[in-house]
Image 1: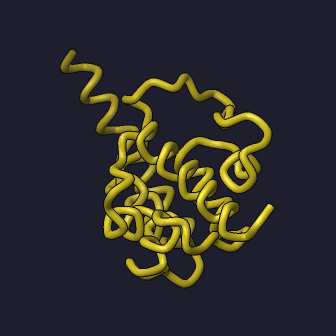
Image 2 (image 1 turned 135 degrees about the horizontal axis):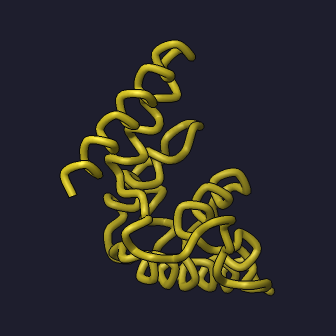
Length: 137
């Protein structure tokens, strides 16, 4: 398969995965922002995201895995179009209410930067808030 056709096919699958996950396939800015909060490596530029969306480039394998995990698809399907499209996550029901938005991902990243003692305090605080919320209902 010619490289240009591979890039175009990848672009189509990426756009489809974005639409299925309720993101705009027409916004490289949104793609870059959402990708960068999930990727632990060097952030991508809006220009790089645009190249992925228009079929001018394919991300590295590491970036592809992050994209696939975020969008809930198989990395193999996203890159090559083979295998299953949807990624089956243990315990996931697929309900929209269980999706993480940008703020959730940032919160988790912030929690991971804390030392274990402060993470334990944060977990206990969240449990306390949940108990209070349940008691209200």
